[in-house]
Image (cartoon, rainbow, N blue to C red; front, side, top):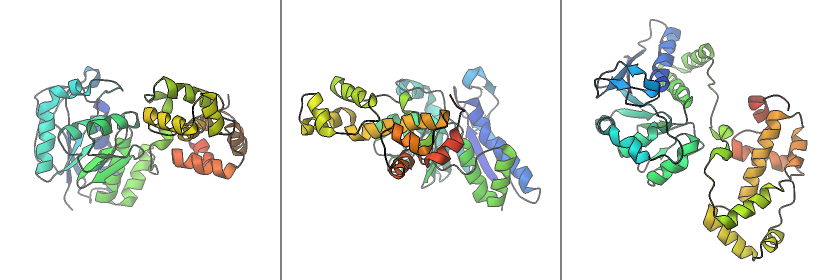
Length: 323
């Protein structure tokens, strides 16, 4: 097997750590595999002679050349930012991505590098992911893409997208697994202290950081639900409190938020339960009761559906100490 040629596309403002994260892990994998393995040829490439990455770090990049896999790192993008303005100066890079894909090469984006792939036209009619904080924005900009906000790594017909930042290691481990075998990938993960058993970014989502949909009416309903997480959900009583019929409540709430009051309540209960599991010693049953569930089994199933982990497993992974 010949060495796998991996090029990382450097561009102005890209995260420097995401430029070097994948090549560094591939270097470690080559050491783990030993000299008999052909390993990897990794290089930082750019259509520009000089690249200033995040924080002003100046990167030495080689001219664009043919590679097997082109990796596109992310950049600093926050909700509400003008994405068009961020992408406007990156025409040469977007053209390079498009040309590489057209030639049959594999393309990989890290984090919000997916926005460059979308601009190059590579995500239409493909499954994709990106940082959970900006998944809705990617879906809005590229409605023909099937954005899987909970996924860590998604590959669809030669185009791979990953979740936020550290998901570059999830991708790199999968690449090592395919090129060097599962044993090398597993050992590389151990040496690098990288988790090789993650399957979803759902446990890391903090809904408080997401833009909150809704107008005045739905926001008042959400506030009422959030202030009474432990109370039994009674749609008729809720509608009466706001002076509308249940049908009107459901219609207006859905029109403003895209979901039902019960779905909002469940998400809020899970958010509160996550906090309690992370910061207290309460049993799972006690946590369930605190957020309105008498049956711990029902609560556990709902919690797993929202976070990808059962409550006990979530506590083990994210416990922050009592308080």
